[in-house]
Length: 611
Image (tube, rainbow, N blue to C red; front, side, top):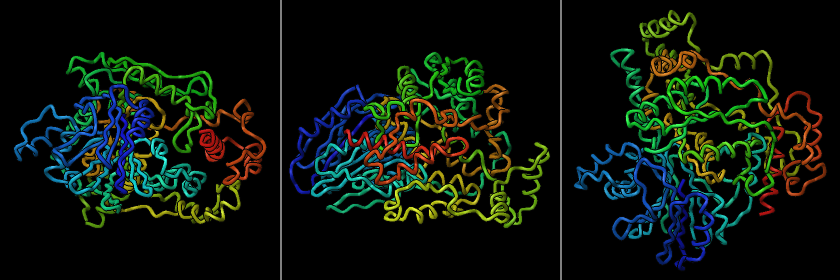
C-alpha cells in the first residue's frame, strides 16, 4: 500500500532532491498518512505512508540502523513473536512495539541476508548498506507486494510502482516486444522478471537482488520445503492443526479496526471470514467487519450472492452485494483513471475499480480467500504412484479404499489421462487457437509461432511428489501477477488485499498433507469448518461461472462502435487490424478473451501515446 522510491547514483553525482519531491507528489495516491524525502550524497529516496495495521509501521522512511543501514519498503511481518524470541537471544530485548521495518533491520544486523530464511509476511523492500556500498532488494515468496527496478548509465533506481520509474529522465521507456508478443498469445506475463518496458525490470517473487560496484546479481532466496507426508495420531488432529494455522494466518493479517472481507459463495473466502469473525468476537470488535460480494446479476443467474448472504447471516457480520446494471467493455480505457501500468486482459477494469473503491470507503484492508484451491483441490495420482513405488499396500487400501467406502466413489486422480487419451485418438493441431491476426513482420521478427509452441508444450514440474501441480504454481509467479493487479499501483485504489491461504506456515503444512483424503475436493476444509459455516456452503461443490461475462457483451453496442475500423496507428506494428476486425465480426460462436486482446492493447498504447 505505502509507496517508496529510491535511487543510487553510481557515477557519484548527488541525487536531485527536486526530482524526489516530484516523485513523492506522484506517489501521493498510495498513501495519505504522511510522506518523506531523503538525500545523502549519491543516494536518495522518498516515501508515502498508508497505515494499515495490525503491526506498527514506520511514519517515515528510510528507516536507519546506526549509520550504515537504510531501509525503504512496504512490509508487514508475520510471526513477530517467534522472530523476537530469536532476536532476544542476542540481547535486543523484547521490543514488542518495534515496527516491521525496525524488526527487519534488527534481523538483518544479526544474520545479514540469511535473515530472509526467517522472515514471513508480505513485503518488498530495498536496503542500502552504506559501509559496503551495496544495495539489497527483496520481494517476499508469494510476491504480495510488487518491486520494480531500472538501471541506466550512472544510476540504479527502484520502486513498488512501475509508472514511477518513468519519472527518471535517464530511464528509457522503450517497449519490450517480447512481452507484448506473450500478452497477445497467452494474455499474461509468462516471464516474471519482464515488464512491458524493455529497460524496467520486475523482481520476481521470492527473489533477492544484490547491487554492488555496478554489478547486479538476482537469485531465488526461498523455496517451499518438500517434506515427508504428515502423520498425526487421528483425523481430528489434522482438523485441529488446520484450524489453528488458518486462525493464526488470519490473526496476523487482521487489523484492529474496520476490515473488509471478500466473500463469495465458495469455501475458501467463507473460511477466512469465519476465522476473522471468531477473532473479532474475541476482541469484542465484530461490528468492525463487513463482507462484500461481487455479483454478475442481472446479466445472468449468479448464485454466489445468495450463498454469501447465508454465510454472512450465519457469522453475524455485515454484508453488501456489489452489482451494476450496465456491462461495458473497455469503459474509460481511454481516460487517465482507466489506464493500467501494463496491458491487461481485464476488459471490465472500470467496473472492478469501482468495486474496489466502494470497499476502500469502508476499509483500506480486505481479507481474501485466494490460494485455497492450489493444494486443497489436489491430485490423487501422484500420491498413489508414490505409495505403489514404496510398496505401502496397506496405506493404499486404507486411504483410497477408505475414501471410496465413505464417498461411494473413487478419489479423483487428476493424472491428465483424458487429455492423453484424446490426443491419442485425435492428433491436435499444434496451432489450434493461434491468433492469425498478428502482424506478419512482427510475428516473423519475434518468432511468435515458435514461442506459441514453447508455451503450449512446456513440461510440467514433478518436483513435489504429492502436490506437483500446486508446488509448481506456487513458484511460477502466478500469484504475484494476480496480486499486482489488486495493488494501488495498478488500480490507484487504496485497498490492500491479504490472503491467509498464501501464508508460508499454511502452505508448508498443506504441502505435507496426504492428498487422499484431505485434498480431494477440499475434504479437509469441509470437515474442519463443519461447525463454523452453513451446511449449504460446506456441501457446495466448486462451480465455474454460469456464463463467461464477455459472452454477454455480444458484437453490438457502443463498445464496438468506439473501436476504429481503419488502421489505428501504433497497434498496427503488432496486429493486422483489418484482419482482426474481420475475425471479430465474422467469428462464429461466443466471444472469447483472446479475441479482445488487440483491443486491450490498442487502448493501452493509446494511453501511452497520450501520456
